[in-house]
Image (tube, rainbow over all chains, first blue to last red; front, side, top):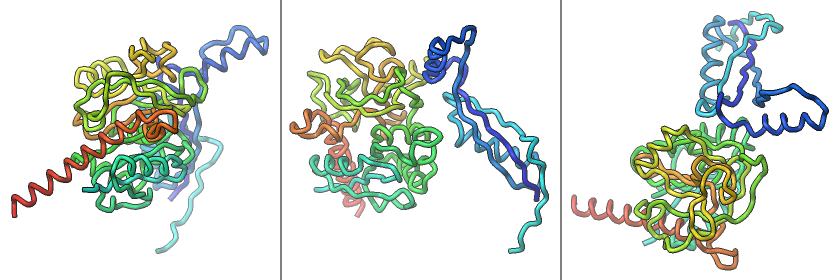
Length: 95
Length: 248
């Protein structure tokens, strides 16, 4: 088994009102920042998955991204492989 | 005849005590159901109360939805059992896909805690039948993520199929005009405050009927919703008993 590290990025779906993003955008005036638009606020989940291969690990993460980390009705999720954490092989403990 | 109605308790539920009290006032015999229980302990109906189940982490209701008790609640609902979700309980029901739509952050960003007026869309549902609709119901809301959302085609279908149960309204009973109307506390699409599933046996609403059950609390309008649930449950239990007796 190998461990893989992923990140799931969740953002409000396009066209869905994002009150947080709007509030952040409105605050930019107070920072004297101009020319910034399209602020969207979401969440990021990072996780390590142990699986025989990357595709299997990714399938698990995609399922979690769809069923738990996001609500597809209002959010969109993307799965990212984290390169920083080099896969390390581990021997499964005998049962 | 007293009917047993279960009130599900998740870590972070905080309206269970008041829900038990309201159910007792309405003549039911309420019982708490722990979220780790895979059994519903033979209750005849279920209420998911308000609160902040699992701290509302990820999204309100997102983690609670996968509790063992929710598998039992889903099976109970699939058999036609009556399930009512209030506030956080409504959020759990939407996350579980048991009622349509999703609840997102209030349009105005603020946590809203105040009394609002709501009007029922129909009086023939198990959750509204005891309502006197000559004036709007005064019930409190207390939520940060109560903005109900569904895409326009879905809302059209829900309206056509009678699945919108409650809308936010002005004091005179006029339904809030839309998302920006001041009578709409959270910006819900078409001022929807409560919906049911297609079959009509599972419903959720953001306002707290259980917090408006005695004049001392400022309003007892919520009791009509709780009574509707209790009476509907009583009828169903009596109906099943009659069928069982006839079969003997």
